[in-house]
Length: 377
Image 1 (cartoon, rainbow, N blue to C red):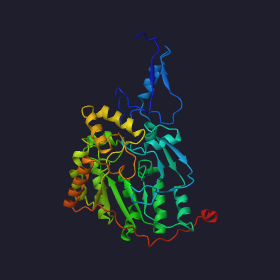
Image 2: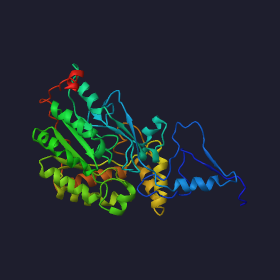
Image 3: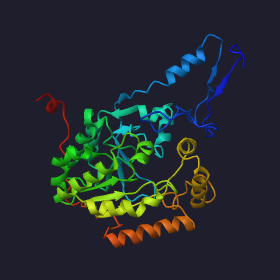
Image 4: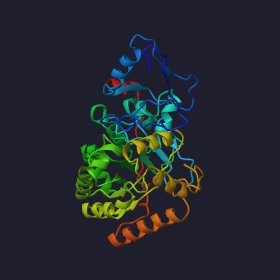
């Protein structure tokens, strides 16, 4: 082709890339794909002055992480889904640097006019006043304590937490109020807060769930590139357990023919490390997660991509995703039933509970309200 000929490259959110994109080291996504609310279609155009070459050179630079500070209007979200067993959730961050390609929260970046792809991994929204907003909520006259989970959308112990400490300040408020909570994380960073978590565990106020999706380091590096290594997560289970904190393992999501063959081995390793309970959720592909995930499959597992998607559709009523209450967290059909049976059998053999621990609400004491005078002295 003549170098002066116009070359156009379309960016579309609706379909996965036909030609697999080049992976970016340390990132799950390979592109800042357009989101579903995008009004304008962006195109690259070769004007004969080397614009495409310059753009390609810039795209090969490793994308840096940006922290965007936000003052949240509220921090406690009320669960409206009958599929979920907790009542409240707290998420100090939006977006997650772990870069898990399967993350169901990726589409939430679309509401911010950001890409669910690379932007979700590189542009992290930090709710700087999370602890203050939580204190206001718990101190409210009408507040009733219920089960509360930290980090339901994005990991509350992702790398930026080491610098900002927003999750720690949230737990400090919960500790003061003796409010029960759970954490779901794939980070060893939670060990930092054992001085707060362990004393609450002795009162039955805490349960922790470590997400362990694979024991294979090579798979972990491409599936969730900036999360703790599998062995490190197992060591965290052991550390928390030895400190008297009840720990469960989440083998979620289960991806057919990718990490699904490891299910029993993961449960056995977690039980050996001290885990006392387990649960698992089949992979979900809502909105933009679907094309991102399918592109990832084509990049890393082209030999089995069609089989993986066919099996996912078997569990989702013939579709790539099924958002219906009652089935979205469990799947349906023969293959979903088989996964649940395998989980139950392995958990029973290993002595792992599958039901959540009862929530201790009787110890709750509303925290003192923040005051301007208190902040001065």
